[in-house]
Length: 201
View 1 (cartoon, rainbow, N blue to C red):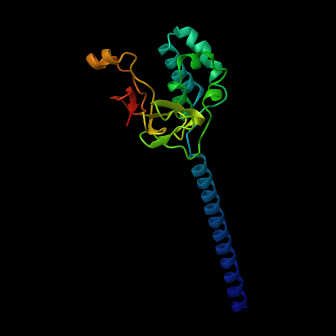
View 2: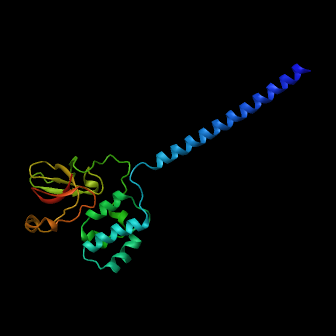
View 3: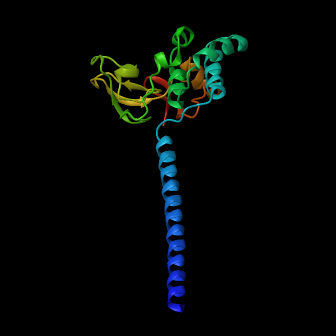
C-alpha cells in the first residue's frame, strides 16, 4: 500500500514538473518569436509619422518661398501614404520646382530601403556622365542613396563622391558671411568644395 502511494505521488510530481517545463518552454519560444519579429521590423529606414513628414515637407516648401498656410495645405496630401526618413531627406534635396509640382513625394523619391546604394562621402558614379565636364546626378542615375547626389569633377568619367544638397545660393556671400549657409538637416555639414557649397561628411 505504501509503495503504491509512493509510486502515485512520484507520478504526480513528474506530471507537474513536465507541465511546468512545457509552460516555460512555450513562454521562451513565444518571447523569442516576438523578439525576432521586432528585430526584423526595425531594419532599414524607419517610417515617419504624418506629423514628422509634414514638418520636414513644410520646411522645404517655406525654403522655396511658400507661405506657412500654403505649405501645410500642400504637404498634407504629399505625406500620404507613410514615408521613410530617407524619402524625406531625398525630398529636401530636390529642386524647388520638383517640390512644388510633385504629385506625391514617393513619385520623386522612391523607397530604397534594403538596396545597395551608398552613403554620404562614399565613392559613386553617374550613369549619364559627361566625361569632359563636371556634373551632378541623383535618383536612379547614381549609386548614392535616394536623398544624396553624386558630384563629379571634369575628367573623372562620371566618378565622384556622394553629397547632400547644395547649401548656399551665393558662393561669394557665404564666403563673406558663413551664417548665410543653409542647414543640412542632419545630413553632413555645409562645406565649400571646387563646385561650391554642398552638404558633405
